[in-house]
Length: 270
Image (cartoon, rainbow, N blue to C red):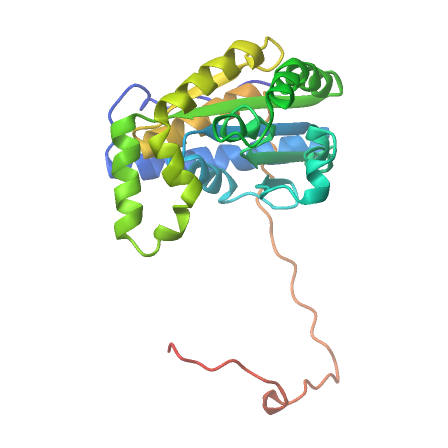
């Protein structure tokens, strides 16, 4: 058993062709990791946090690209309901934790309280302070229960975030990504920086440390995150040997119903 092999492209500026080649190589390794998680009944939780437009969603999408959604799934919770606001803070996240043989990727997580809720005054000082006290204990409890907890913070510069916001404004396909909350976060850059530094001070613990991803270069951030994720869980290659398909058994006397009895969608593209 061991960690996956590194490529000879590390620490080198990637061309588009090299990026695509390395991306395909890492996809194969992710599938191997998936099969190992399933076989060994591992429980893996990966948190993706960071500034708006830092590339968290794009990285998650690339991790999931070739994986089985029954093994690896993403959790992206919306605004809590009125009922959820009255629950123990971590309660709405607990049902989404993995069972044996699963990996769950949280696109933002319980750290909302230490970030957007703190900066935007969506929680009280008492709620915030209690989170800072209880979060490390909650995560230690998860680790003691057998969960592998990996936390990523995507770091993007002020200039790069501004550039990405401008692209979203001009591109109708991306414009939906810009919420009023995103625009407000742009105006409160310093407040979010202070909140992040305070969050790290309390929650960068030995059992579940924070791993910072330099995300100004999206493609490199994706590869570096996948590479690091693979290095965090030792796995073996369970790729099946070559398979020969058995001959198809013909159904004697079976007559299929006419195609005309079925309803087909219009063939707009031919």
